[in-house]
Image 1 (cartoon, rainbow, N blue to C red):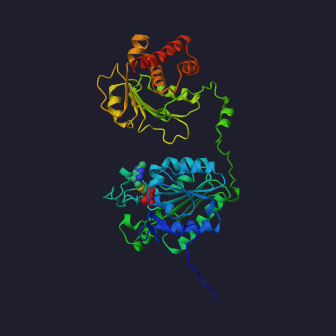
Image 2 (image 1 turned 180 degrees about the vertical axis):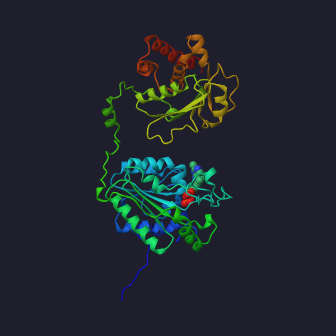
Image 3 (image 1 turned 180 degrees about the horizontal axis):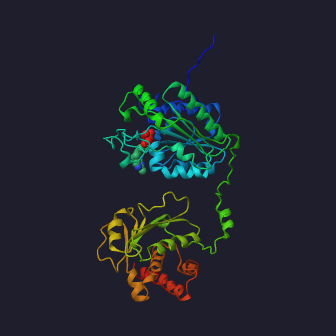
Length: 479
Ligand SMILES: Cc1ncc(C[n+]2csc(CCOP(=O)(O)OP(=O)(O)O)c2C)c(N)n1
């Protein structure tokens, strides 16, 4: 006797672990939701095409956000609407993988509208499964670009009015206007025969992807009983009666045998290769031997903050550039206020051996505050035991922290009164930093100035050399 065994397809993990300790044998989707059906069709197809271990699924924001609970594939979580961009990078870096971008209509057609059009236009080697349930499901039923005319949602309580809310967007029609896409089809999940057609479309798209045949787009008309405030059976009928006339099913593009296998150069990951192509010498121009640096200054996370025009960014860049020559790993991350000059500006610099994780100095080991608002804003963020250097020329208040080392240095005064040029404040900062941390030697910084100020007059380089020394000497003489 023939035995039928019911089991999960291999594209799914065995146990759905929703939260630590909460293992479930069912999904988080609402009863009657189309996502579960489509998930299953994809999981089965992946097993049959033998691509489970070769697939990376990008799950975006929306009800599909938890796709990683279910699929036994690689997974990246993408910001709302950005799955096609993440899929692009994933596919380019892993040209032998099948990359799936699984998106809802809010995600794909609203916030991610441009992302999807650009990825389609580039003909990325990705499969897009576009679940069109005519509503934002996850957030409780707001209007989506695909919401029907007259359809009541929480944001269109009187029904979608095309004059104020625009017309429902037909994404298959939009995507198939572009030249690059290989395969574009609209299918539906409203009854068994159509689920079978959806099954075929899913397989075709994944087969094409397995053969690296460019951009595959399958729009799946789906149900959202919770968002639509209908029971599952009524939802199925609603798709048939209301959605089908507006969103005709069928193949919108099939290049068939004409489809080209798309191969692209893999991005070069080796910096030495990139430098070679750009004609930059991979060798450091100057290689400074390190001096003795106290343990507390061996792993620096620095926030430099002040007014725009105070040399905040140059200070950060100089810190990172000099440290690089001592063989540290460095990062520099600028953050500009709305104005170029006079507004607030700050940057984060990391200097350390080993890998730098976050570039932003959220909890800095050192704050270099060039004006009062910066001190007031960032003093509290310094780690206990950290260091504060502040510009005592402009800051007329006392720092409040008692658990940090504090160095008031009249940076503006040294630059302006002593050296006669307020624009050299940045290098005064570097001198003070060198004296406090022992990380840089003044003569090394001076050696590097022609590189830091490439193309500038010798007199400017000389003045900055004086500035480094002045900052260094001030700290040495006063602390
Ligand atoms: C940047 C950003 N904006 C808004 C949200 C809120 N948000 C979460 S899901 C969602 C809509 C998702 O709708 P859709 O893509 O249609 O997927 P569905 O839930 O219907 O499957 C929104 C607006 C968010 N998470 N991130």
